[in-house]
Image 1 (cartoon, rainbow, N blue to C red):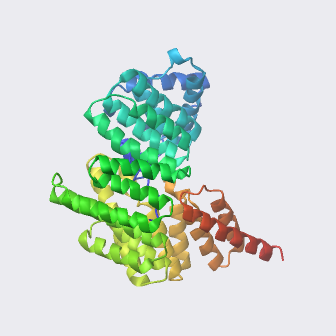
Image 2 (cartoon, one colour):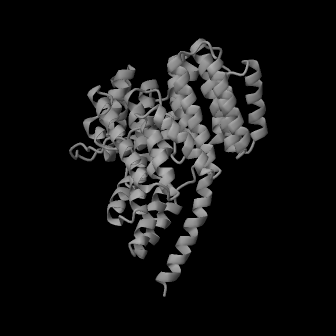
Image 3 (cartoon, rainbow, N blue to C red):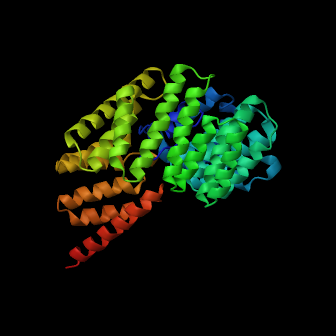
Length: 436
């Protein structure tokens, strides 16, 4: 689909901070500048301050309130970690987990990689705890996938699959780790290898829907769309035949699978087919913000039903804020986070307003989305929308600067490559006009 999914990490509050919700933008009161030595000592204290998952969660929440200070802290800690000898590493499991996610949150990806790896190494080599391994590896794999480090993904997957763990670890290896491994192979161009492995798993587990979905994802990635749809449809049949699943579980899985199919239709520019499925999903699950947002966006992006599109997108934002409010009441996120809607939905609203030629209001929403702390805001599509809005308002210089900023973003999907070509043409045209 059009959005840029990042699986939530199994780390309590930190999953919301770095996954579906954006981190708080509160900042602690300015503190006295710490020396590198003091920063290192502060980081070392995490070993004693984070002895449980609850401790780690609380510490992460504290750190993200002071982004400038945390940025300096993780950089100093990473320098110490890299310089230490293998048999005398300075940070324990929970400390590395907190530092990894704190570094990720402040967008210090080099430091984040140091600590994600350290956390996985400790979990796999030292702790031998399935719970710790799963938590560490899941976050590490997500990070590597987002950074397109496919060789490292393969290496980490192979390490985990070689462990003779308990049932929970075996299931994690079979489903989550195998999924990441095959996607990494697919994105390296080894589609046939990934499909062959998926076929073996389908046969081994008697057509289990999980492995059919996995094969469909690989085929989608390889742009073999018709084959992917057939696999997803076979997955739906397998879910319906599964006697171990409850009715509500079947319904949820089937809706998710149909959603994936609608996304493939959109990739093929079969907009009517894609929106038809999304309409059915909205009818079946009217409280699902994602279904409403995507239906609204796809229609407005293709200049269809703009009035209905705007209503759907506004409904999606309202549902998202309602969910955030509930999460805040349960103590899962901060009150400030609860007031910030999903940046992708705000971009959708800005885009439908743009299509309705409400440029001032559109620009306000588009800039809010682009300026979000959400990692999804670092995407060429959002900056392309902002640039188009500036251009429509006759602000050519601002449009040019915005398009150029978008071109600095890394491609997330193959469709981003197509958008990059169009944005490049817009830049050339504006440069020519401004040079006259």
